[in-house]
Length: 434
Image (cartoon, rainbow, N blue to C red; front, side, top):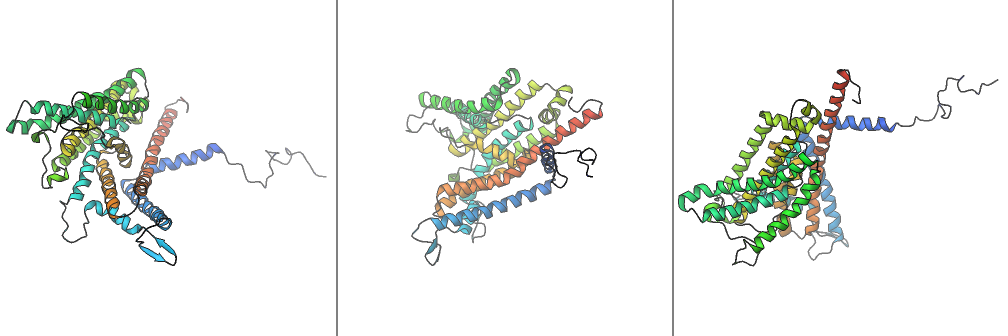
């Protein structure tokens, strides 16, 4: 006689047959994903470089497929390849050759010189992006999402231009050569720092969300500078919305490179000096330790006596100052004047910071990659028939593939920190949810 009582058969779940697969636990699945992110956050520098190179190679493979498919669908007069009735309009290998090697000025071509104009354009973009990448990285290290670097750069650029124009009317000769560039850089730092302090104060003392305030202040910066230049500081001899040209003593000198390239090695060396300064500030000073602790472990920082409001305000002020210096360099190196419609260096700086893992030294290499892509995109547009929209897709694809592992690594580090905090709390005798 069979026993139909499940409790007698030792079955703890009468509604499920013993032969059925167990139902996956969503919490357990999330725990596995979290542990994988934590392991990713603990990767070494060598592993991160290998991951970045693999991601770059994969993005090129995917981009090659996209260019090939687009080339098969497009119509052209001079196809690069014809087989039967099918034509291929774009050569994917040549496209990527122009994108990377073209940005360096064809280093494998005969008679190549590192002082060529295209390499100067790449270094010019890199120089500005180092400043904006540092600006975003410093704020991110403090746990603050500064999305307003573009606005801070614009304000710093206008402050630098107006200050140099004013000071240039007071001094001349050797004195102007010695004073105008430092004064312009200082004015850019003050202008950008002041504009960064506004969302910093709102977050520190009014608990306003810095993402919203910094994004809104970007638009305010664009409109206010447009009004000021158009109505009060416009160049009367130009139809463009711009200030008068800065005196030659207030512009970075072109060293080794052709002056027409609008690039100065002195500005690049200044950017590298700021990289070293920010790295030392974050890694070897008490303020840097407080800033990093507040960004990673805000509760522990508060318990340890860190003034969170002051740290928030200071970090956003310094972040804005770095962006302002970048704006000053853009005005005094590239344009020679302030002009509305400044490129989106501030938003690109967010990507540079993520690519660098918010590391000041890594920002140099991330900015160089970004500079190569921006400069190389112009080469592709001139040297091939590939539509600019497709070139933009390729550039975005490379950035996405390279940035995503670093983005998840940052998340993994934060999850590891929170897990360590909970374990420390339990060890100290508190509950896991304390």
